[in-house]
Length: 94
Image 1: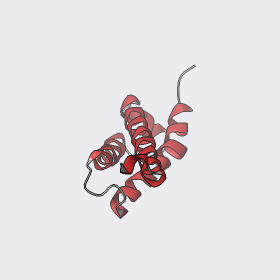
Image 2: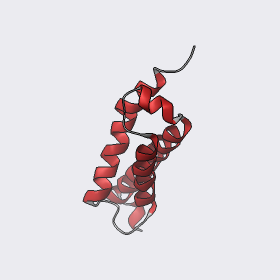
Image 3: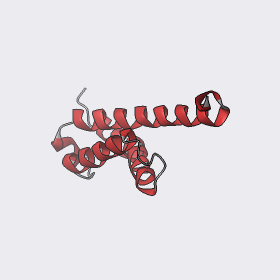
Image 4: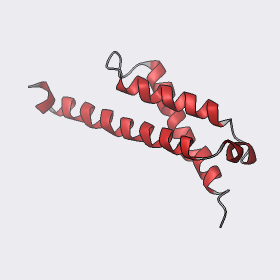
């Protein structure tokens, strides 16, 4: 069985980790109001939701899990988590 081999197992783990990262980023983007994106000086909420939603859909489609487009969307999800989300979290009322 191919999944029991080390490369198959590593590929499966990477697939699910990236799926979880993209799902978390998408849900996080949906949770913040559109005004928060403007106040933080970041790209708009519909823009981030569209990009992260496409990233999630491309991760689930089994056609080409390691394509250049999927890689670009993966980078976009990491950019959101590293740059946009902390800026949005800094705007929360206390």
